[in-house]
Length: 120
Image 1 (cartoon, one colour):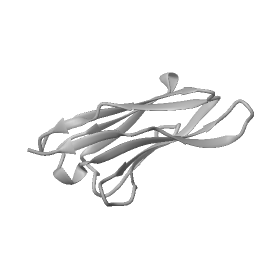
Image 2 (tube, helix red, strand yellow):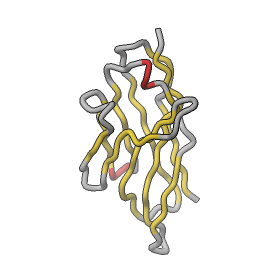
Image 3 (cartoon, rainbow, N blue to C red):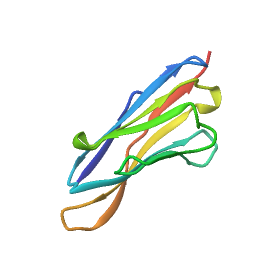
């Protein structure tokens, strides 16, 4: 069994910052690419940021220059530093991870999500 647990969401004013974290645990032999997605009410889930096991990153155009994704491979964790937050960043943020289990199979798993609300 695998768990991805997000934390760090909350209510913040426009222009403020939040840092989200995702901790992976369970039957994981090795973590591969990890991602942050978000889903706003009435909208489809969208990819926000990606980080490979080697540390290569990519971002949605809407968050470039404001969000930074990072990870600590030794701790199986990933973070998303979100600065200059806008009301349109309001969404549930989900952690997603590709991993190999102890049978050598490649799998993907999702966290339960954490709410981020940007409002004055």
